[in-house]
Structure formats: structure tokens, C-alpha cells
Amino acid sequence: MSSPHILILGAPGAGKGTQSANIVDEFGVEHVTTGDALRSNKEMDISDMDFEYDTPGEYMDAGDLVPDAVVNAIVEEALSSADGYVLDGYPRNLEQAEELADMTELDLVLYLDVDRSELVDRLTGRRVCEDCGANFHVKYSQPAEEGVCDECGGELVQREDDTAEAAENRLDVFEENTLPVVEYYEGTDEFVAVDGEQAPDEVWADVKAAIEAVTE
Image (cartoon, rainbow, N blue to C red; front, top):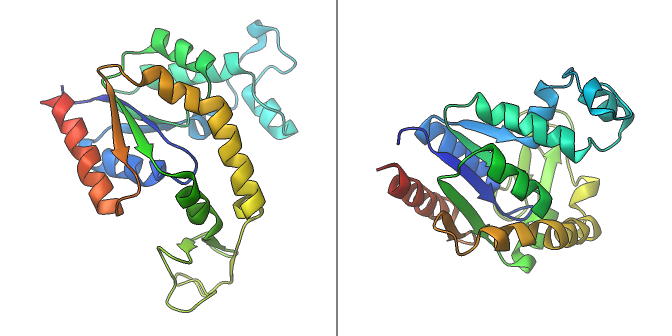
């Protein structure tokens, strides 16, 4: 198996983006995220679905949630055109997990397991450059000069969705909606839990080993 079908799960701050990028570089698969898939299919004709709008882009421009049925269709299209993939950000609930089972066959379900208190530290410690958007962290990825971007010299700020209150809310939403998805896959042959509290290189070593085990 040269092009595995991988689903990566984990709470906000667990490191899904970092490890997905590693997987793409190492195994040459596509990184499929709900956000990217929606942006790539903004003009998709959904008029036959009898929703309020005729394209996903109209929902996005209005600031409304794109209906699950539309998201499902877009993800299915993205997966069907990918030779291999790492799917990140979907499914977010049990209904979507059941839809995914009808769309594709997964070779591996990776779960990055991180304690809630550690997740809060990671999320609230992030700092973003106001000018270029570069990301830093007060603990894990500090700039050379406090509060100043290494890339462009811009000011580093804490985004509104990285405050303690926002972080706790994001984790509440994950535990209510998406943790049941983790439990849905737990116990299947494809499921592998990885200790996400290790150093990033150690997490990657475990992730890589899990993928190699299903591609041999």
C-alpha cells in the first residue's frame, strides 16, 4: 500500500496540523481539511439539495454554518480525487463518522492524546504576528525578542480565540461533539492512540511507525 488513507483525530492544540504536515512530506499524500475543501469548492452547485443557498460560498460569505449534507458531499469529492490522504477536521460528530464510513475505507485512525490542562497551556500560549501571521508560543516556540516577530519584526498578539475562556469553550465543544467520534473508532483494528504530550519529534516517530505498519 503506497498511498494510505489516514484519519487524524485530536482536540484543538493536540498537534494535528504539525503531524499532518509531516505525513504529507514523508508519504506524499494529500492533506484534506474541511476548511480547505470548503474553500476549494465555494462555487459547487448545491441547488438540487433544496437549501437556502445554491453554493457553499454563499453560506461562508454570510457567516453561516455550511449544512452537514453539503460538507459531507465536499469531503467525499475531495477524498475521491486523492490517491492517498490524511483527513484532518472531519468527522466532527457521530453522524459525520457514519457518513465517512460510506465514503471511503480507512487504513489508519490516529488519535493524538493530550491532557486537557496541557491543551489549555498550548492554546493560551500561542502568539500570532499582526503583520505576517507567523505563529509563536510563549513556552514551546519563543521569538528571539519577546513580543516581536522573528520573521518581519511585527508585534506578536494573543488572538481572541486563544484566551483561557475561549480555549476552555473550544475544548468543551470537542468533548461534547468529537470525543464520541474517538470512542466510535476506539477498539477497531485501524485505531492507534499516540501520546501527544511527548516532544514533537517523538510524537512524529510514533505516528510514522504506525503508518509504516499499515503500508508494509
